[in-house]
Length: 441
Image 1: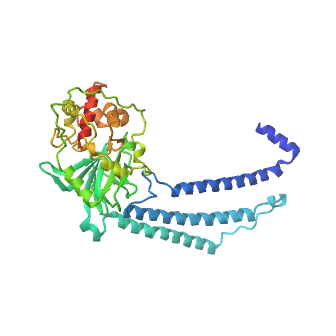
Image 2: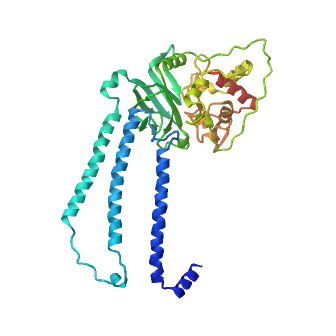
Image 3: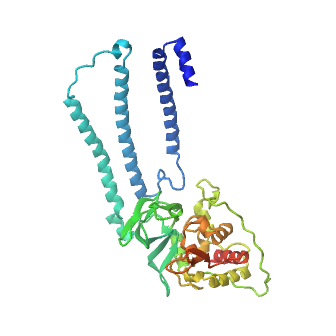
């Protein structure tokens, strides 16, 4: 088809005449399309409001890092405009306009213009200085809590595991247990610097809360740290930012910043034993049949209620999560507690005041009050919890609840060159476990 088109054009007009025009039209189309594309990118750039955008900051560390990014963008934009302008000028000014120009002798060649070359070198160095100075200042500022604020800084230890985060509070103790420990949701005081000690129990992970602070690696056998601060109470998304295995992409966590009073109340509640639901002897002993929703393999694990533009803010939804589920069934909860023991969940998990001494998995003492499960991947509701309990290998490939850890079997155990079932859960078991775990407020 193209050959036919060129033959037709060649029979009606010279290709040497039309091809330059086509090239000119192409340049116009490219410039016009690029302008609209850049305009669209600019619009999306300034309106980025996703859960993990770095364009909207909520603390001084993230703000300092964003300013370095802006400075770099402006410097490189100026360089781009200058170089592009010179290129455009040279293209238009010195292009061949006729056949004589095309076959003209090239001008006398020289080694160059020393003034221009030295000027370009000087401008390049100046551009680097404009980027380097604020970058170094930001590095010094974000490295650790400023000296004048260290006295008021709050300390937390974050430990990366495949594939979830453990958070310890050294200054908060639980009677007879030790330091306060929770998982996947880091609760901090708002308006106060927080120093996060970064550790890992296995491979390299990276701790990143985009709206509060840039990423810092958790490295085996090496202590690391960062600091962050939430200027106002809020609910923030975090992510492991270093490839760490099969489920790296779904290793997430949340940071919840509370005002002084709410944070003190949260600490006091976390220091208490797990909630126990009394079984009323007069209540019906019949265990209800529960039908949970089904999900596609890679279906999202959270609903629109966690979007920034939802009718109820994510922070308010988190606060609502602290209250017991309505119409909970004491008999079903008691059955779930028995299943939790019988299915050996207590080997890897701890429920302070109930059962379990395990540390290989997240502490579940107040699991029902968290807004996420499965390492920050799924919303903590009955359907998603049933999804996690039923198909942990599908939701989070390679997880140690399914395959076991440190020689202990999980849902499956090795059998020669294959795997065989080790823990099986019936529909009734899943219903009971969901009721029990959701009661742990």
